Amino acid sequence: MSELRKIPNVGKQTEQDLIAMGYRSIESLRGKRAEELYAEECRLRGFELDRCQLYIYRALEYYLNTENPDPQKCKWWFWKDDFYLPAPCGAVCTECARFPSECAGCRKIEGKVFWTKYLNRERCAVYDCCVKDKGQRTCADCMELPCERFTKDPTLTDEQNEAGLKKLLKNLRQL
Image 1 (cartoon, helix red, strand yellow):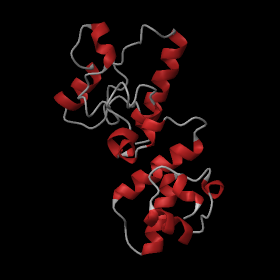
Image 2 (tube, rainbow, N blue to C red):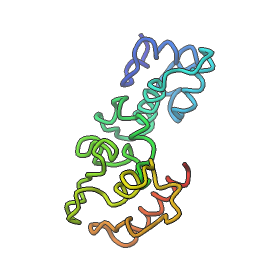
Image 3 (cartoon, helix red, strand yellow):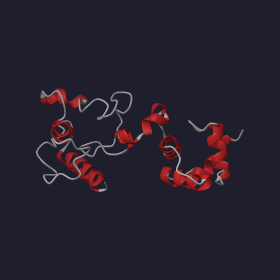
């Protein structure tokens, strides 16, 4: 058993696959992106692997490339597309400090995020419009983006809200 098994979610088979791809130490994996590892393993095996292997590599990437990784976030199932890819508004669950301990993710909780209580709403207005009304996965293709549904967080400064909106829009445009 190599030191690779010290990485959360790396079992015997993944350890063998990583070694076969030339990764023999934790240090050799630092800085690697999950998508690169997944593509490498697919080439090695000669077919496209189940996406669960990609989720394991996403968790591995987080664990190895984050200064103080949250042990809760190291579980591979928190790196599925529903949490890793942008939510309707462009937020990324895996980047949020409240995920997964305080929030299970926008899609899972159907837009019933913690801050809606401050707006006297049951659900996020962006989620309602995008998912419930328009049947879309994200606002990326909406002609009104950004619209008035993207509200300011009253606990943040105007500068912080502006930076946050820019990040959300960047995430959506990358789709």
